[in-house]
Amino acid sequence: MNDSIRRATLVMLISLARFIGAAAILGASMKSGWAQTAPPPAGHPEITVHGRKYTPRSILERNMGTPEDQAMQFPPHKIIGNLYYVGTRTLSSFLIVTPQGNILINSTYERNVPTIEKSVEQLRFKFSDIKILLGTHAHNDHQEGDALVEQLTGAQTMAMAEDVPALQAMKPGGKEHPIDKTLHDGETVTLGGTTLTAHLTAGHTHGCTTWTMKAQEGGKMYDVVIGCSLRPPATLTPEVIAEFNHTFPVVRSLACDVPLGDHPAQYSMQEKYARLQKGAPNPFIDRAGCRNEADIEEAMFHALLGEQQKTGH
Ligand SMILES: [Zn+2]
Image (cartoon, rainbow, N blue to C red; front, side, top):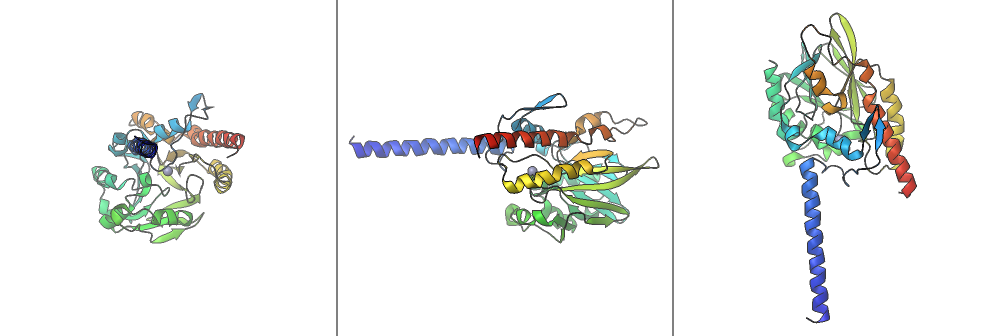
């Protein structure tokens, strides 16, 4: 082999190896649901909050579980008042039932929509009674199914203005992402006597929306907080830093009796569900747990920021 052939062969082998490596990384990230965050979250920094250790990777794994967890129906159940859980094991979907029709928050992945429909029907509600479709944030695992839900129900979809560009880029099977109404921080959505307030809690996405509502149980009113993910991205831009610096105090200031989140692990759904018992106190009423997720993610945000400043990125 002369020199130029040898060099050409070497270049070919290197690019082949790179290609295989990239394909392997892509495959791994698709499998674990990391496709939306590039690069995949690291095993550092490690933080300890309320006696538990977390890394960016462990938080994502806690949120997403396995691909089976993301797709597997979780037993649909009443949370409190007119609010129900209709999501999968690791992707939350909430149904608010009113005399004038229902509201769905988070369609999750498009392939999960039939599972959500099944859960709604198992609770003896009609999927076609969904009149309004809302979301927590413009990532596929929470809002990819919006177009299909709108097709099946004719629901009116509403989204926080700051998330609209990311939602419009979400087109499963080429379907346009439906947005019938654009919302702004503090705006409310009312149907059949239930009012939801949209709080802009940006950082995870630019339009990340925390929803609050009141629910009645046993003659008492409770403040429900349906949190948007507070998980910081791997790289913190000045814009994202400013967003989180605004968001954490906002989240901490919300009146809260019932903390919920767009991934069930954010509010220990499985443990609480296991404690549901007729006549016993409702485990989803958890004032002490209201700040847990903010505690974890704010500590992680500062640890990531410290690491980023140290390495000068
Ligand atoms: Zn997300």
